[in-house]
Length: 267
Length: 267
Image 1: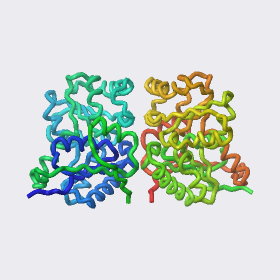
Image 2: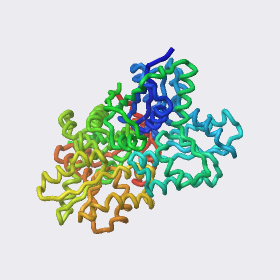
Image 3: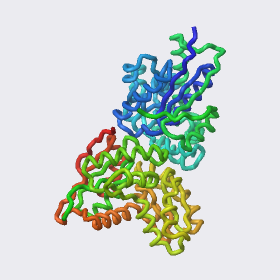
Image 4: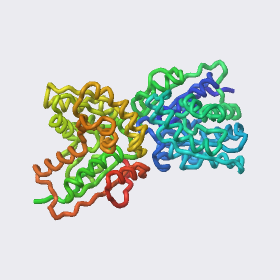
């Protein structure tokens, strides 16, 4: 038994393509339909109620595109809307928080984990809850880094100003002696080089995109939802507004190839 | 004859409060209803079609609140949607481009004017068109400064990183010998100190908020729409999503006082 339907991936914008990249690498025979809400990006500074309303609209659009599973490639949405999406939709729903938290616990030796993300993600305390659910003794130091997304979207991945702001954001976590840092925003893997340059190699970075892709693989296997091995996985990208500069940044940095972008009208 | 109805002001978010501040200073007896689309902010990176659709929705909400005039306190919307708003709505509509362009032409001696704004504003060429409509010999050097809005929204108004980015953005304009710089985004007046620190005092800054307020005063006088002199002007603020950090930044920097924020549902 195989299931040729696409994996549905959605995000507030373009950042979730880091999850798509990880899925393509891990599951090349799976087709993917990606939906980015560029008409209303960013979600990070917005309220939980608004993010939840947007998430339901996007998930509904993906069910109409016959998605076999919903991947929430956005930490902000995963933080505030995952339980609600799981209740409202019958297909499996996978976010980025749980897989990231699990990987962080595996990586940490001193049980002191740092988490960075948007304001909405950090305010939700979602990583902290997910980490403590498994290990009640873990220490968590969190920090919202609201300027990193705009810097990434401008393509300043290798830039002195970006390095300065990373240092400013992360210094308190380092001083607090974390040994593992969760990149709790799907944009952040694009800053892996910069963060490593600033922090050095003593601190393990946990990339939520890669861990999310592994969780998707596991779930597809468990529920017999894999496409046939010989299937040629297609990638289709739809956005709610015309793509801007950042699509080129992401495409180049991730070396992703996809055809024309479809414009998806919002309800 | 006097008209007690409020001036309707709208913006993609909170930045338009710089226009409200200028209106309060100039027209203290006028009531103002401000509508900020924080649920979909920012507009700067979005397409003209999307910005136009959002602008019509906001203008309609203000007409339902009995606004006597529509003030588009957003350079992005003014750049791409003003003629359309003027056609669709019967009341007077005033944007920020035209008044800013007029003030810049008055200020410049060497007829070489710089314009900074969001990507959408600069791409539209709206300031260039408005400047050339009056003086065909003017030279215009434009530059999109997409990181300034996030820096302002984070409150980094007096910060080394902000100064570095201002220098990076403005250096080509200065090298090009502008003598006047239009702050073509309603957020930017909050950076007046920083920009002056970086550029020195040789370059005249034109603040679109102040010039927009003067244009509103002129139009109200011409069309006999002024409130009575003894009227106590009220300021009412409505946002489409819960206010974030930036509302405090703006309130403090502008020393604006207003009561509770109303949450305005979108259609």
